[in-house]
Amino acid sequence: MHEDIYWQKYAGRYKSFPALLKGDHPKADIAVCIPVYAEPDLLLTLESLWHCDAPEGLVEVLVCFNKNGDMTPNEFSVHQNMWQACLTWVDAHKRDSFRFHPTYIENLPDPKGGVGWARKMVMDEAARRLDQDGVIICLDGDCTVESNYLNEIFKHFVSHPSCEAASIYYEHRFDALDGKVKASIIDYELHLRYLVHALRWTGHPFAYQTVGSSMAVRRRGYLAHGGMNTRKAGEDFYFLQKFIEVGTLQEIKTTVVYPSARISYRVPFGTGRAMNYLLSSQESWETTSFEVYRQLRTLLSKINRIGQICLGDKVDKEDLISKEFLTHPVLSAYLEQINFSEECIRIGKQTASPSSFRKRFFRYFNAFRVIRFSHDLRDAYFPDVPVSKAVHAYLEETEDNAHDMHSVEDYLHYFRSIDRGNVAAIDDPMRR
Image (cartoon, rainbow, N blue to C red; front, side):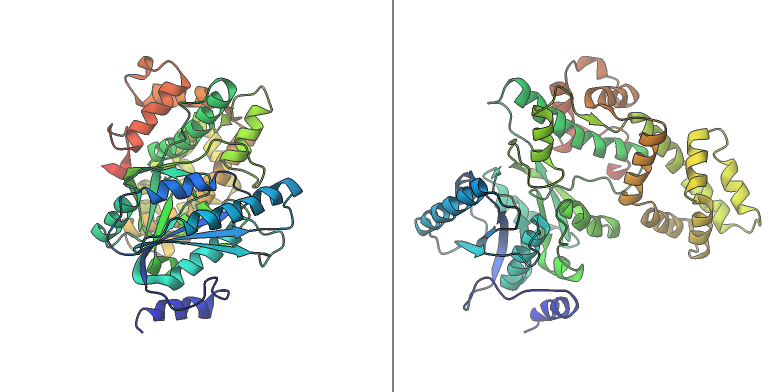
């Protein structure tokens, strides 16, 4: 069949595994993929999906229980109890157009494997079961969703045929929390939003939220871009960068995912690990100093000029590029360290127009390079600061009404309003 060509190319080039679910099945239009590892609140996630408005077509929810060699006895007990509870729940919730499929993987291919392996296996299973133009949605077993979640995601992909992947709006719920727990989750979510807003302010085109429980991908795009990676952490960031860099990732702001604010030790970073750190210490969350973004904005503001130099016929291009940063000693020292001028000259030799130079430049100075840039400047010049201080500096620079915000919760609500589309973004080149 024509739709199997995509799978055949994928399976021929990338590692795949036998199907988790056996037997013939109709092609689904949407598959929600939930990796499960000792999730005590999974039934809340399933109930949340069950009460969603039903979109057109067949919806399947693939619930993939997985283990690895690091699972503790207590986690194993939670895992097994939830497996039995899930089976009971699924048996009581049946609808022709809405099917739940729990699966149990006794051993991941890598005994130390983490969420990357689990996501890959369940997303590959979704790709097997979906219609050619179906949509794979990633969710976690500690999340709930707004009732329009399935409808809005499906409508977005139908209405935007060029969209291959999407970052879905999310909010941690903290209304019922108080004290240190509430302060900690506000700090952490504010940190996530600040990083994206500050990066957009610099003019960098690859600034998006990349949260594994709040993303979706078209089946064709998933297969064409090599599927999910198998990293133990950060798999969501690496996965979505493939679509960000080619310009096929969009944002869905018309629905909400509500991730849990609980503690977790399962991955080296992320919400759970951050909550553990914040609750076990007296420190506030620290984030990248706004001074780092000032330096990056200065750098990116000169890309057109650097492109002119590299595409021109001058012989002393390296010297001309260096002169652009003479009045910026921090940048000058850093760019010399990474051989920036030589890289730009190389890009110039491979391009023939200012627009193609910019495009190729940002493939070089991509999100991974930005992370290295911020870490290097942090270590040498601008140490991390409390997130409230960084956001205050950002708002002092960009927002006339910054004085009306008096707390980190005010800051977070402000960023949420922008990200939900209720307030115009400040100096945002992505949305001009």
